[in-house]
Image 1: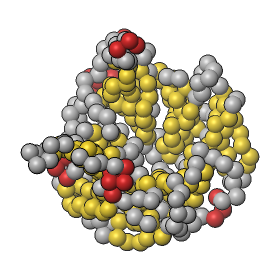
Image 2: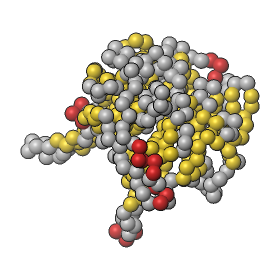
Image 3: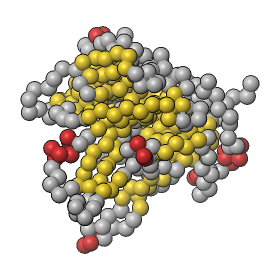
Image 4: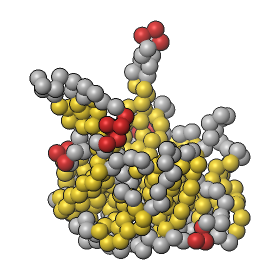
Length: 378
């Protein structure tokens, strides 16, 4: 169901960014505009309302997910800014969470849902796909599982925070879709909880492990002063990468792309590492470019690296400074190390590979686009 016709990318591998040549941007199989559903900036003003208001959309790097039965779900948050008597409380009260389900083959919108997202707890619009083809979403006072047509299947209630506390919740579904990590930031203290992504039951064996920063279904990863460490349930922490950045900068894992491999950004040198330290792929970003996001297929075949570059001029007297601007999403074939495609994107973006590695969905600028990836010859 996920197999897409392959785009004409044959000549792309001949180009080389290191020599100043750019691979042409790939054309999407389809494009769906979600701006009319709230995923776009909208300004409102009138003679009776002289103070302009703006509806602001917010997404995260995990605001799009591809399910295993040919569906894509997009999650985002909107809030109202401006107005004559705007306050923090008014902004918080105006927040809404949105889910949109699309057909992955055509981009057709299947279903939409919207809920209030009022305080006290701040929730990120993260969504993930589980192994059953359903979608896990943090909504209201619980974690919920929705079908592709956005009917609620199950729910886990979250405990209420103490009155007056600063609280935030986030959720991430791990690559295989079996487990999810629920993160709770309460007054600056971070708590992590592992859940089944299908039943939402707690996985108690993870509660006694050491503190960690990144996780897959089998391994944990954390950064220490002398390098990157990983561990599993049955062995202690092991260092798999040393310091390669000049102080005070540090190498940092971006994310696990499958249960035993993760992407590491080491000051512009990007590596795909196995948990045993084996280097599967290495590339270097062009000078002056920085990694702002990374995704990979669960079979380890492709990685997508979102990069930006510094632009503008710096004039301190005028309070003008250079700043980052979106550049390209670089898609690599790990099998041969080739750069196969570059995608243009705007700020507020997210990516998701299809479960069978045949496509890459890009959410950017209020649009959802699907791109095909080359498949092995039969």
